[in-house]
Image (cartoon, rainbow, N blue to C red; front, top):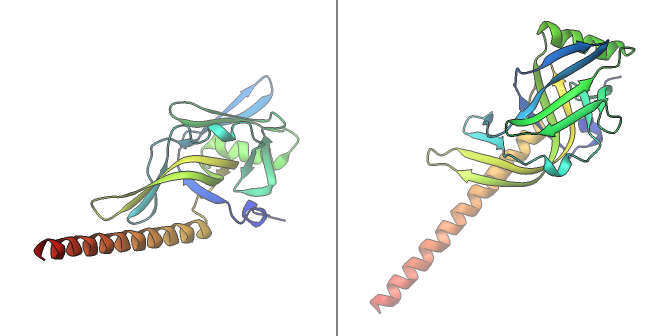
Length: 202
């Protein structure tokens, strides 16, 4: 039975990534899938006028954690795990690189390997919680979040990577709240300026 990781961690966010940089290797009978699960400083659009990116070093605090490699965020389709040393993850200047060692006795894992090998599947997604980020209201009216630190739960090889609806809804709420705060701050600033001007006239 399919079980999404979001059912177990409803507070978790997911970021869609279309890296197209996955490769398969077969060496001495060992099958591996490797490539970048995230690329630093690349803008990923959530909706028109809203985007986010991952800053270099955002995964550093997660590198010692117990992270899973999944197919389509399905917790019943585990391809590898850092604790079992069947998933290797590391950060470099380009992004978050990973290598999954496929279990040849797991037909689901082998099927995923073969799909990646043929090029039928070449996209990915990551599941995480945001620890810290920076928000930028740009001159063109758009908003951009730069994620600077995350708690990483899983990396997934995906057929169709997509933002989870809960994550998009949360971003919408963030944007509205930030715009509201900015508007209130502007009003207070104008009110204070008017007060100072009237005091000078008196």
